[in-house]
Image 1 (tube, rainbow, N blue to C red):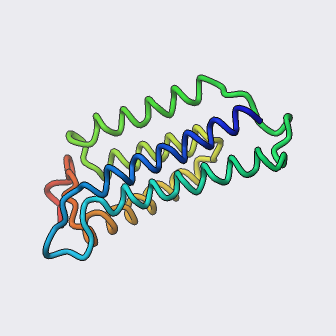
Image 2 (cartoon, helix red, strand yellow):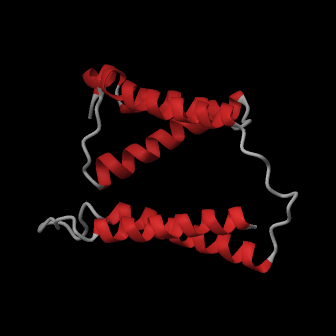
Length: 149
């Protein structure tokens, strides 16, 4: 219970700090939203998650046997996937790097090959749509530069 109280409180505080920093980001005159929008959304999720964890711990709904011990190997593997994605994005491009990272992540968390091979390109296409087309965030094309649209 104490660990959940600390974790939930830390998440909520991190969210509050993120919002306080995101508020200082400059606005873009021609856009209805600015660079602080997504940090605020993520921060809101952190705050709500933190409050939920604290409330669950406070009411005693989380039993002692519910929490699995943290295994370092998956945590390190996920950190390696994120680092690999960041390093591969420029030479390979966002699309290839994202597909590879998502396949690895789905497999890491126990998903099957079919799920990984279907989910990764669909999620990458949705991310491309949101960031490249809607938000106008330039994404590196890497190897796919000859077919960039």
